[in-house]
Length: 169
Length: 168
Image 1 (cartoon, helix red, strand yellow):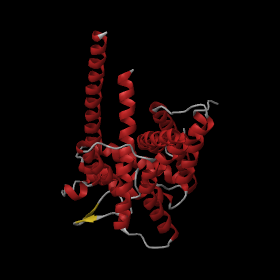
Image 2: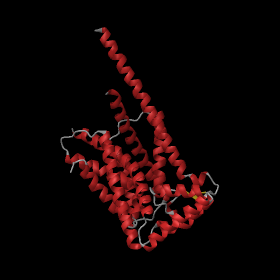
Image 3: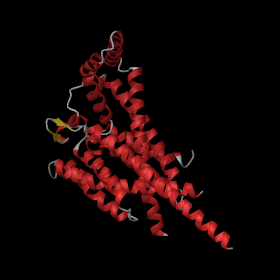
Image 4: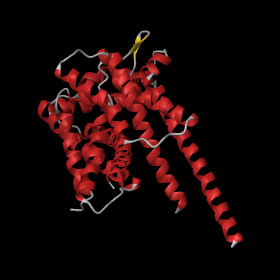
């Protein structure tokens, strides 16, 4: 009986360690992807040499995920970012959340939190589209930041569940 | 048709139609494919009331399917629009593309690349269709939409499952 109990405890401890390891690995992979993606759209601002090939390549890659309208892209120094302020906010939000998840345990988030985080972004999109007020890069960036952070947390928690279920099986 | 594919097909088509609306890209940005995937999973859940919890794998698959349908439809719409208007993004970006190929210092290969680009451009301007151009936009759409579609699928699965747990 005692032997059985001990084996059970040992197995659950092994599963816990395995889950923690896979979770950290997952977080590291996601963080790396986000860092590479962020460096990509900051390419004109960070790497100032005028290399037409890299410029063309990065512009083409990000043109598939953003309209890249120069008036809506944040200007750093003399160059614009390769994505608009809203997209930059979303990616930076996800990046900040990715860093935070290493130091803080993510609590179980409710849908209400997701709605609250995405409502400002949706309102900003609708109101600027309808012409209620003019587009502001700051507002777009901040609303994107909140949305990106929450989306990342939901994304990570679902993937963690997925991998922990797999390891239990 | 399999119940799994129908929501993906409907939402993919819807997203592709939205891409053709002028100015929609300014509003939707990178969110079109993830939102379409999310709606597709929501519809899938509605069509299967017996399913209490959507598996992450199913969410990813549905997101991917929606994105693939969206990419295929969006590419075909773009090809049709190019055929009618006999112009495309390539026409405006041609001088930049030529410069890039020249900067690569490929020697005779650069000349060939420029020839291919010019051929694509002349095909579009004369016939309204270039096979290489069609292939290029379909492939790029497939890659980008798929990545964002899968992300949308995972997030939507998390949200819908939380909603179900709450209602139970």
